[in-house]
Image (cartoon, rainbow, N blue to C red):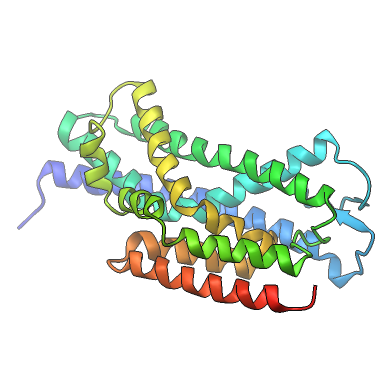
Length: 272
């Protein structure tokens, strides 16, 4: 039995949207890897200095105040890293949006609307990236961040882990995760496909807000394992994927919460 015209078009749409997202994610991870290699500096002793995540070997004395260009580089680092980590788990929602647009509204060109929806989603994570940059500045100014952007205090690191673990069990986590796990239900509960630019952008922003509410505390753990620790980044991204895209995602989230509390308690118990 051959596919009808609509099925053929939908399959083409999935390939186009999926291909574009794949390229964006690949570029984001390439940028993160480039920054991580630059931050490593061949194992050099960075005591008394801090690296600026620019990919070109810029370093400054640890006690020197941040400059506007450093703030911009750190913000860019967070924004690109969030794209690389979060876009894969958002792919089902974005693909569903394109599909609903094609089926429900008979759009000849649903890609513009889907693009604005994705832009709204990424805008939410852009807001988180700004907050993370400000938090990094505060921690660094308090001399609690080492040259590899890792919390240097066992006590603070343990508190962050425990807080993250507890959050994994909260009702707010449940609500946000449920919105992320069911793309079709999210669309139906929020008015379905939008034709206008503003509507697409705001709907994507709303979905991104739920996603931030679901995952922000996991992203905060980057300060514990190292903001530029590629293995740690990949593990957290995998955890997000498992939470959102598997039938047992809620139980995975709770198991991760228990592990975080246990690790945090152990870290707090270490000599400070």
